[in-house]
Length: 172
Image (cartoon, rainbow, N blue to C red; front, top):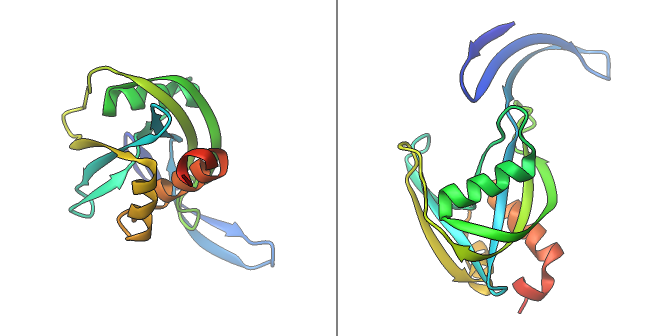
């Protein structure tokens, strides 16, 4: 049964039967999918965004990301969000993987891309977005992880995929 329906997600409750035969009342957040981009600039730097998150009243280090619109391909959403949030335009973009962000209560799925960028356009933020773009050497991004400066799963996953696919860059 739908409890709430908004622009980004719906909250539903339902009784579900588990594989072990037990039944439970499930409270589930159904969400649109998301595209996230790890932007690599000139093959040796990473663009990080610092974004204010009103839900937790904190600034977080993240990577450009946003909702995938109806009938939009994930890669198209990734390019759009990258340009809107950072002003960067990528010449190459590759899907690195994906993840469920909070599978204990939500079906939200995030597609993770790695982009090679060299063109800087103009940031085009929505009124509710508070984003500061920082470009750092790739090694500095790894140091930021070690210091606990990245505290959200999607950003950490993006760096992990970056390490897997771009060892040459992130392990210099």
